[in-house]
Length: 433
Image (cartoon, rainbow, N blue to C red):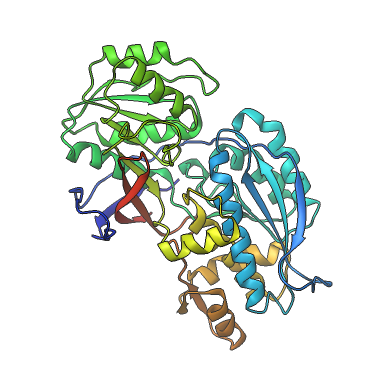
């Protein structure tokens, strides 16, 4: 299990924002064993990107992303980022001189666990060198043993449960465990001057685990948690009248909502009962574009956190060139980097099988040092010249540590604008032990 050591505010603020959030320079956090949310795996397909050259020995990468279910809003950006990475890899010459092939399976959420299994089986049938995804901790916990049994590494792009740290030699992730996000969110709440906090959290390993980190971090602060230290709601709940009534009765200064798509109904019920929705805090599971769900200003000024670096305007434009419908970019950078790392590991190991990729992933991430390179094309040239590399991707994470977590990580702090869209405010970086 990993823990968060500390973080600093990098001062990286987008030009379109004129305000900053004052953030404490260091924090200690108690790591929690959390879990995961699920995704369904309904179907799969395979395709190749670029000119056909998928002869014997060509690398196949599997993509496992939520195109349906409560996390379906994360599907378009992860699928598009995966396809963009494949396009860039093949344009640079592919892996071992051959184009990379792809197989993609849909996953939904933890309420469809049977589809997690069938989705991974459909990917494994394509004999991939690695599986990229899912962004859900629960789904990842449901499927990693299957993949490991076939000696296929899984590189998750959004599974943040600390309980996944070091869980299997074949499991990696391009996102930090939730101890980091929990510490940042706790400090945002404390520095905002909140004295009475209520927490609305669903009974999911991701939710209760992140809640535990936040509760522990705030234990010695001036923040009194008036509701939600132990209480949860059912992830399948659709009527939130009782929950909101209870939250309102606790008379909090602010409410932290840790949930997925249930957040829409919770906020609508808050509006119905006259709860101030401009005193909410959201986390990565529900930080999305709500411009089509609420009237203007409903979430204006509400802070939110998302693990990982903010997707740059240039990268967002490239992702949208693959799929113009993409609106959220929560795990796009993590997906892109995971795909590139898998390809580089195969190239370095001179084979496209899962065992080779697993053995070489730490090295291409920079665990053994090496020359820094920022693109697949640049890194490929270095590998061909016999040099060791350290891939410096879009996420800004450090090399994989012994638990196959990023050794350092970023947390983006956002604020919702008048149109109920999360706008990047600043970035905090920290080390993962």
